[in-house]
Image (tube, rainbow, N blue to C red; front, side):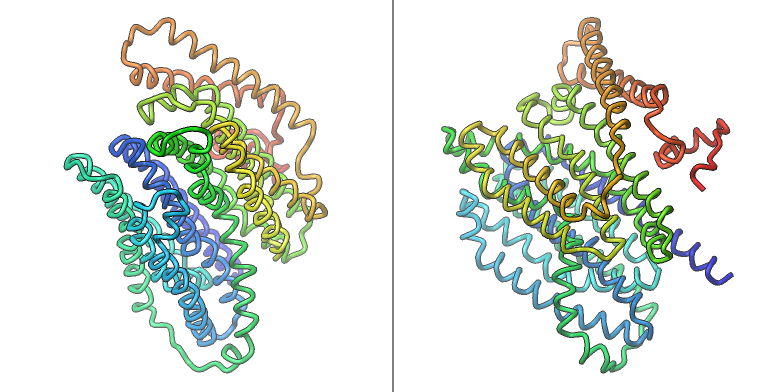
Length: 532
């Protein structure tokens, strides 16, 4: 009875955390659309140049480190030892984050010069303050998650994003109506990170105050685990952070090489900054496309861990294959849909249809990151981290090496090419290094059927766009794009799921894993014994 109650608590906590993560990521992606519309391409360029630094820091505080710390808390039996462990982790993280803060605060000028824009210095300094909060945010979030209390993490995460987004949009509105410099706007917009962090920390510390965890001297923690703890933070915690921050790492590489690459291609500094601002739109679309995959992987991870611990190999394989195949199919559908609607999506969201080919190519990242996240969840549930870290670092180095040369030769589309090549190298290397754990996950026949469905879907959506354009009397290009999106997105959804149903692309278990579809299947009375 006690085990059943605990399992129910874990499931309820996981659901709450998944919903909070979904809401936070959705907010983090959606706000950039009105923000870009207010500040324009140059303002968006300034913000996006520094955003990867913020994003990587928040990945540490929200996902990677709390998950790692929660595992350490679970493995530590005595409550007083758990608290002592948290304080020790805080001290280690504080040293690391102080070093990062000093590098960003006092080395901002050098970093800005390396980004080919010295005026970014105060923007970098603004975001640096956030790193002083990370040790406390990540450690206490991890502590409560390890105690199966997900509310502090969930509530603080949502509040943090609401505060940050609100500050950014208010700053953008103020800057637009007072003709403020894009760099001054970026400086104040980046201050939203530490301000939101303070709000989040207030929520968490309130929880700490209410629960008042007892701290006692624990020699076993203090003496026996110090050295292994540092190495585990760097390896296990670092790997979890890297996986969550894959696209941010690649964006960081773009911050250092896109403008210089475009100048080598022949553009002036102003033109290169403008193009970089347009190119950065693709990151917003990819982040929106990743929301569903991220939530799906987060939701299945506890099931994978439980099946592995209980040596339920068949159940583990079912969960892993189902998650990978559904995520692959849905991410492919989103990428193909964006490709078919790209001029209209670009114009609808960002007011102009520029660099459609570059943005469409970049959006293929949705598929590759979805595979990478699922692979990591499978390996993480088995406590395997080295292969994932090696693959991600290898892909990052590939991006660093080829990004600027490709941009200098092909123009801005070279940045999209470099991103895809780096992600492909990550996926292939990880599959090679961990082939025993990642084999037989993808069905060749399913991929063939899926390709046929996606081809028909693209044809249907493209035809619908042509028909709407021919029949619509609307003269406003942006309003026309809205009409096309409203008509053609449902067409794509119907053709995709209808084609998958006709060609039997998914098993019943896989249908049940797709959000909302499971309810439809249950209503229709389709037998679900395959999922048991």
